[in-house]
Length: 156
Length: 156
Image (tube, rainbow over all chains, first blue to last red; front, side, top):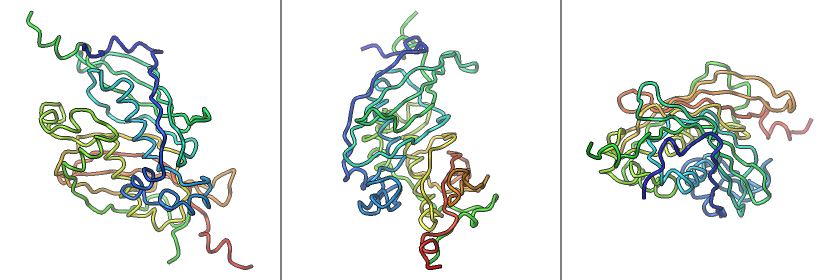
């Protein structure tokens, strides 16, 4: 199947995320390795915190968002990664049992000045919960090839 | 032991990170779950990419940075989490076998206008590799209590 290329990302194009329910075990496993603050690894500490329950590390929510980006468009795109993110907001707690979903929208598309075979596409991704509340927002860019690799190596 | 509070974070204070060597297995495990792009899960695809080897997902590097923040100051601080990050740059690839380290510096400290018991402390974290190159930079804020909880509940 031909991969999506720069021209397939006009400003305004939107990709919807699959939904995923987050378990307490997943929250604790991620946090134990990367962010062992009490509200992320202990149910009682979570309930006692301002977050109101066992809550996912913000970086866990971001990692789940990344997987949703892969599943919604990156896996089928001639993408060359990202130099980073402009901003990553964690607006509301993500608690055990929450079902996450969301979407990502193209906000800007331009060719690279230094590498004309590459386009820079900027996106805003929004992760939502089962109540339709936005829990996380990420403003970032991807480098996306103007032509898929198969085309670039074709004869002629 | 008394926890660190807002007053312990003057502008310019720096905390050094412990060092940690990242294995190929760790890179593949994280990416398989959260960022299954070929250069993060397949050695040959990594070598063929512009990254030059099996490379960690940027979000993996960020998660490792978060653990370094916990180990260097958050675990012993009266911290109340973060509303997100201002920017997260992935400046250079992190490859299997790289040894990461780095430091975090306070860049701004002010009291919250809406919650006077809370200070807002802004930091810049830099993750470096074994050659002293900066691989990731994160500009973010933490909410930190002005007085540790034990003090707030003390009689009188």
